[in-house]
Image (cartoon, rainbow, N blue to C red; front, side, top):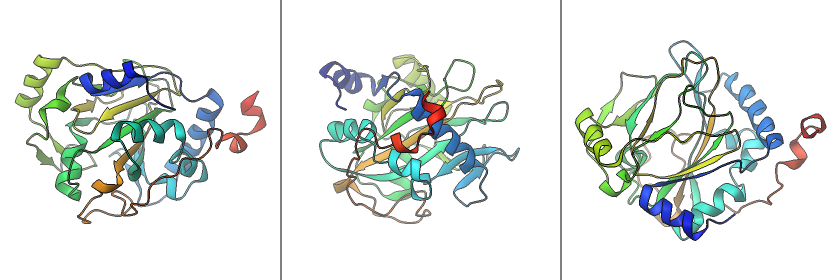
Length: 264
């Protein structure tokens, strides 16, 4: 799958592009069911909220077959190689839960801010591509972006170790306010199966989910192979050390994992 010239221009100007219903309902049903199994596991890779529900599951592509295939899916990998102009490896893979009633906030931050400070990633030649496993609405903790904020470069940040169960390099209120006054704030919403691509310097966050509806999203953080990390202080399942270029699988790579009743 390749982006159109209009989509490439939108990405350059706004820092993100939204692609509705890229994956079929059958593919999403498969992945949602596998996510439920993963969240029930007692593994170091599964981080939990203070209430005990899953917050995020790292590196599922290394221990689950459906997510292994998703991590090399051409609908996710090829648009990123197009934008980064070359082969990519998996820097990070996570399934964020944002559970109904209990899903906590993700504070305002830039992903490259963390990757540069914690992993010594040389340049912002990496990005996220995210797949909605549930319908994302205004009420179940949608991802929020400040458009055009990627053009500000890597911003000063503080290491927040207290707000949530996951440490994050976060931006202060004055910086967020200034950027929002310039670019506004948007919250892309849409049906399960939709895809979001966004620049690693785009400022983003998400509110808590106090609705009765889950909001699960899979994130592939893909980095150009020449831009691989130089520091290895985080666990390998958080910041991967295999810099082998991803070879995309066939477009129907999930098909044989789908149960017949899910395809009816």
